[in-house]
Length: 157
Image: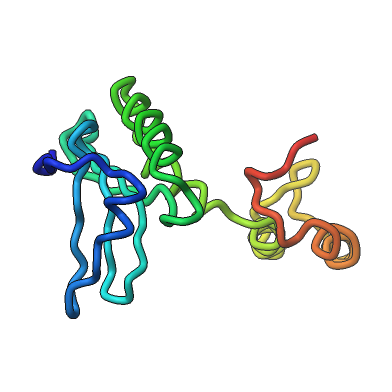
């Protein structure tokens, strides 16, 4: 865990933090182990939480920017994330997996490629050229144009 600071992260304290020439640095909260703020050379300040997974891997997760989140809101969010870590979850990995989710367009392209190569069977035979042409038309006109940009995990019934 990060070294604990002797400072509680408050608005007044955070307003006084200044960037250091060409270096990122972090200041950690005295109350919650793993909760801190990262200050960039540009002066941007972001709240972070640092933890270890049940497998022992160290992770650092950005919670949000100072100004968009108050220190109290960030503290509550950090406690939620650290609580889920205590329950055995890995919030940073879950967020990474969400961001890697395929879009509907990618899924449709994958289907068309597989169907064209004969990997999808219909009644024991590869789909015919007319069926594939029909599928391409439906996908291009209806699916991709309406929901193609959405991620798969964002869809509901």
